[in-house]
Amino acid sequence: MTLSKAIVTNGDGSFSIKETEIAAPKKDELLIKVEASGVCHTDFDSMSWGQKLIMGHEGAGTVSAVGPDVNDFKVGDKVILNWAIPCGHCSPCSDGHQNICEENSFVTGKGHGHSSLESTICDTQPIKRSFHLGTMAEYTLVREAAVCHLQENIPYTSACIIGCGVMTGVGSVWNATNLTAGSSAAILGCGGVGLNVIQACKIAGASKIIAIDVAQEKLDLAREFGATHFVLAPKSDPNFSSIKKSVQDLTNNRGADYSFECTAIPELGAAPLALIKNSGTAIQVSGIEQKINFDCELFEWDKIYLNPLYGKCNPQKDFPKIQDFYLSGALKLDELVSKTYTINQLQNAFDDMHNGKIAKAVIVFN
Image 1 (cartoon, rainbow, N blue to C red):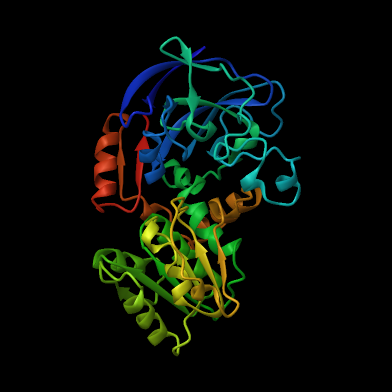
Image 2: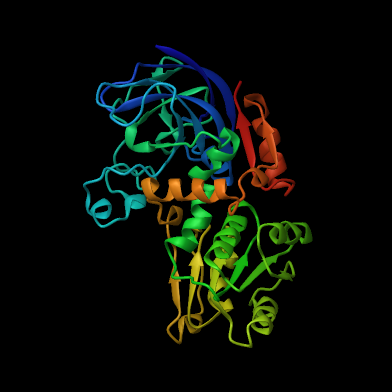
């Protein structure tokens, strides 16, 4: 039995720090000593999901113990955690869509993502982990399929954000589009995910990377991550007319080849369609789930609109690729982490995130 402090929500919009008890790993499970956990808007939202959870879904750490059926990891290995846990045999996994596994998806509510449903106890009762991970804790117990190797020279603080924000951004370019050298791309929203879209466009060789945001400081940051052109958007542009004209002025009055919505603002769900050329591709990156109205004229002339989950993540392929680009200097990770916090400072992290003071917050342990 391992004792672990964890950030727990009752699902009522609040959280507290609790002591949990974690059983020894069984079968294909690993006990992970969490070194760093990313903080994002989904973590804030998870406090209102109406259920008790250990919070957190972006994590990196070291293997503390392994179950008897674990094959590829040993005690002491550095690892990154992946929340879209593939089973490897359902129809989506067999078709190469591990990010939407039918058996282990926390998003769809199917499967449980770990083999011991009562492996973690809080207040004398079993407790679930957010996205089957629960990374805002000193320790967590996960299945081997949720774990990827972390290369030695990558800090835990930079590695933990690979498991959601970075993967969602770069994957939306690498896996969800055919963006090639010379393409033009418009990125709407230059927060943490948007900056990773910008980085991926740069690596792919896009000739025009148009950053769009309502905040000048975010456009300045976008320049550091590879944006080539900049549009300071008005805070009210209900028909996207001003933004659309700015993008067309930069693309020979055609519109961008690709556009990416990275704001999570429902009112902007249709905006990427307004920014692309005929036959262009619009990607709704941020996971808007609310009902929104679309003008069907935006879909005319062979335009494509996609809403990929988690950048269509294939962890065993994509996580090593991200790490290699980081180690080569082509992909910034350290610079994304604006500030680190302790386990007792989560509210400060949420406040800084909502006030636009940071690109990415990370909780560090020890």
